[in-house]
Image (cartoon, rainbow, N blue to C red):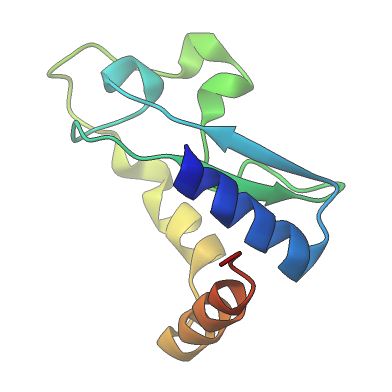
Length: 103
């Protein structure tokens, strides 16, 4: 939680978002395919969509699938195209956010 707070503070300083969405999804019914702990810290602006975030927050009924059911990749290519950026742009973004991390 302390790390998520630090990242949220850096995102606010870097981007001045209208808000920060934080969430942790765990298990197949939350949309997770490989069990592991992770925490999302997402700056939100007016009109921003869910990106690759949790569709279950919009409509829970369509969020998960039965354990062991195979992944339907039909929307994967479109989702990946929407979020595709160059390694250079990723590095610049990481460095910008990192420079605003609280000490």
